[in-house]
Every structure is written in structure tokens, then in C-alpha cells.
Image (spheres, rainbow, N blue to C red):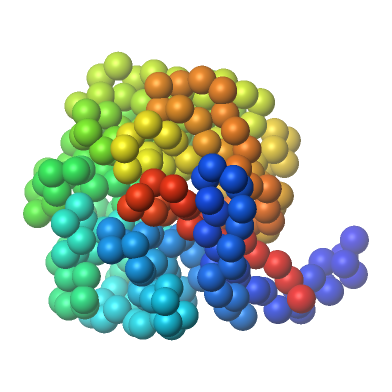
Length: 290
């Protein structure tokens, strides 16, 4: 076992940026990178994807198959929690700051610029931006508890929305702005939940024997894409890389899911919303070693 692990450790990681068609499940490879990239956002023009790699944020042009660095000032240690503003003029990122290495949320212009600190308290991991552009939703650890919080996109006082035992993570607004979806271990396994945007009416939405993470709403709000780990393959509160996982689709009002893709991935595959603006495709990252 130890020899096999050493062999794997010396293999090169390949990140495969892919797009899958929702209606057919057909997968198309956009580009293969011989280093780690993560978490594509699809821009509303339908022509570009935004991803993170090596702590920086990049824009990938689909038609020319080229990537361009987006200048982000001091934010050079970004993780895979990044979101585009509804009007596409800004990017919010989770950046591990120099003073203590913990994640804080910053915003800068989508074409690059000086970032503005939004959450002085850390760690804070961004996941959602309200449709009206006024509020950010994120997971944060405060006094040993990880819960869902919201804050004005201009900064200020944060608002705690969840207080259940265990991890609450991955908050994302529905396109109508009335709901926030999130994932929680409060039922034993990691499952998807939905609540009103003010934190009321917290309702469990998935009930299967998998650990479900990162609900992403389709542009019309009718479908939810998410990633699952096999029960027993990981701890319910963990979402590591390099696992056999599934991307699933379910109705936003609840009901049976459909497995869209089976892949080797996990962390970095679909941490942020990557629905195409037309709602017909989904971007994601799979991985392999060679």
C-alpha cells in the first residue's frame, strides 16, 4: 500500500476542464492542464469560463482555447470559492491573507483591479451573491462553529443564518432571491437544505445515502446540480480531492435525482455555480494522474 501511494504521489496531475450537456449527458473536453485548476464559473456571455489555479484567478476563452490572468492585486492566494456578480462587473474571491493564512472575502473588478476587503473576520469562504447584487452568502467559522452567514457586498456587520450542530456550508441564492440553498451534516450525512433568504424555514431537500455538497441552481431556478461522495468513502463533513464522485441533477422543488456524470474528482470539481447562461450545459473539472 505504501509503495502504491508513493507511485501515485510521483505521477503528474492532469486537470480536465469539461462541459456536459444536461439533456444527453454528453461530455466535451475544453482543455487539459498539466497542473491543478478548479471551480469554473460560466460568464453570462457564454464565451468564457473563470477558474482558479495556483492562488490566482483566470479567464478561459472557449473559442480561442486560451487563458488570461485576471489581475487581483494582493489576492494571490485565492481558493476555489469565487463568484461573479449578477451584472458580471465584479468578482468576489476567498483569499488566504498574508497575516495569518486564513480565508477572507474580497471583491475586485472583473477585468482586474484593486481588491476591497469585505469580511475582516476569518475564516470566511464565499459561495453566493444575491441576484440584486447587494448581499454575499458564505460559510464562516466563528468560535469553533461553521455556519452560514450573509453580509452586504459593501461590507459591514455579518448576519448569522444557521446555528445547528455540525458544519453548514455552501450557501447559494436561488435566481429569484427568495431562498438560499446550503449543505449541512445536521442529519448525520451531508445533505442539501433550503431556507428563506432571512434564514427561516430551513428544510432538508435530499435524503439519499450519499454525502451531497454544493447546490447550484440553474438560471431558471428549476434545477439543482450538486456533487456527491459515496457513504463511508469520506467523513460527512469532508469534501476531499481525488475521489470517485457523481454530479447529480434534481428538481429545485425536491424529488428524484438523475446522475449526470460519474468522475474522478471532488474538491475543485464544482465548488461554485457553473451552469451555462442558457441552462443547457454545466462546466466542471475532472482529474487524473499519469
